[in-house]
Image 1 (tube, rainbow, N blue to C red):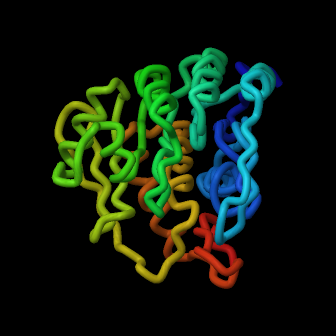
Image 2 (image 1 turned 180 degrees about the horizontal axis):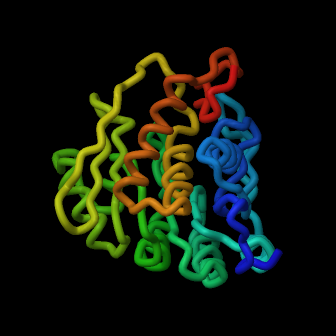
Image 3 (image 1 turned 90 degrees about the vertical axis):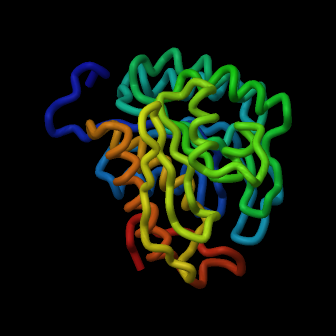
Length: 267
């Protein structure tokens, strides 16, 4: 079937451009689970292969820029794409490659999860890569979904700046909308801004739930709901509900570290 010949029974097609988590909790593995949960067809273009488990990342192997671009070209030229989610990038070279790869995806909406700061506080993008992200990708995406720490890096802001102002400052960098996710706040509240009113999207917090892969799940669910035809705000609300349930249903006893979220609700 050609990309333009999608039948009414064919689910929307969503492409994840992200890293692979060998432990299965985050990255493209989490993205594919979230896509399945939302009823869309998932495809992947891997940016890096990580060797990791629930305790640590032991190695990262970036893919060549040409390999990233060719993965995108191959799936889009045959299958088509209705939305794109971008996750782990890692280097300025990879960011530039992904920007070039987006030339293949046409008008499909893009959700960027800027994997910049780990939950431990470790910085995952150096200064050159952060500049490349702001220059090459932020103006091209429909929604960017930083957590609080990432929003502060993007906005060049300190801890005294409130999430609502962070959302405005990140929006000024060019995306169509910003969702500052509240996973690291006392309340599980996201902040949505698209140039009008600031909108709070709240959910119940599950302190005993799993967290590994929650950001990937949220951004993937948001991209899926854009592909399903929802506007950015409603897609963000539905993504929040999917990610919250995945945290609530998180798996226990998977490895010795942080348990993975459970987007499919399986046991």
